Image (cartoon, rainbow, N blue to C red; front, side, top):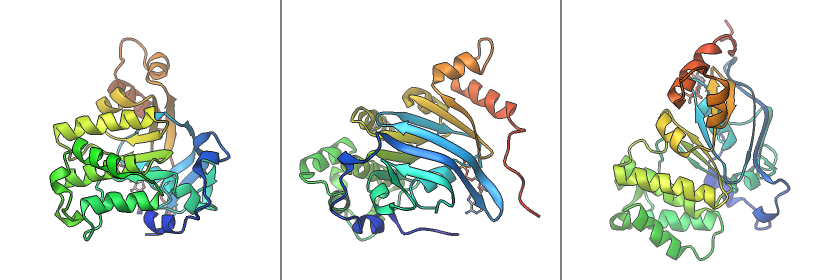
Length: 277
Ligand code: ATP
């Protein structure tokens, strides 16, 4: 599968002169007519999206809808060949390092470095994202996510939930303009879930744009300020939950689950073409 260099590798190459405060666009994310095909079959088709700081976008859709493909393309993990993606005004294809230095990506199963301790991951993240004076905040994050006891444990010794908690700590510490999360709560214990939800809200309150992809519709309903529903590679709804309730589902059906069912059933004609023979 085609892959790009890992995020940290590109950040190492980020020039010191990149000033995120003076980026040319107020929009944190601008996706225009983005399409992605695997071996001739479109996974995402003509997808556009704008997101301002402080927004929490809930990205939902059936299995295979194209959510992870979209997130991995925005994160710069998959190359963008059709359409364009700009992070804080920087084109992910043409100004890759600057674009990546404005985002943090939390995959569904984060893989920390086997040979770095929890604390060294914080140190590494602060160095990559050029965050000064991070130690007090780092200590507070370890307390909040109950990782104090694991401060000196290396990545390979962490459970899945601990790896996710560490990813949340690093995302917070990086002070990015955009955080992308793919099923961020899977594997977290109840306290971890509470801390993660609080962190997502706090990130948005700090002005960070968050994209939260999850099949947990109640989570999306609870946290998201906007909702985007993908089905078979196409955007079939984007707006607030109130707009979805008013415009999509007639009668008394009001939950996001009911809206999801209605939208993803209605639009089965609006799909990406089947794989080429
Ligand atoms: P899920 O909810 O199941 O995680 P998703 O919405 O994240 O699904 P994607 O993983 O983006 O969906 O997959 C979208 C489509 O692209 C699917 O048809 C999938 O089979 C296909 N696809 C994803 N990755 C690859 C790949 N590396 N090679 C070929 N096809 C792929």
